[in-house]
Length: 81
Image 1 (cartoon, rainbow, N blue to C red):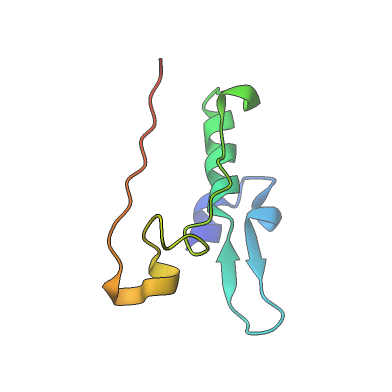
Image 2: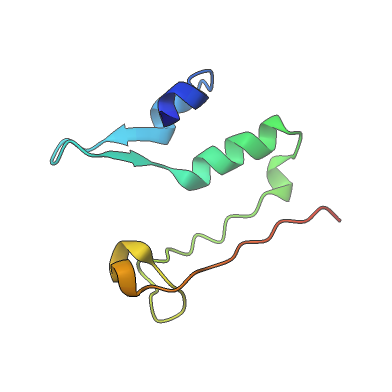
């Protein structure tokens, strides 16, 4: 379903990866958001990725990948100044 929605993105093969070990598909959510923002006219210098992984930092934020049903929720905010 995701592939069908974004198949016109030339970056689609970098965004969706199939794991060779377990036949699962993984979506690079950071990359897809960057691509969408660039297509909407934002320049690279105005897109900031903190590089913080929620699964690696459950002491600072929630991560469904690590905590499953016991996790809380995170909020992201974007603004145009």
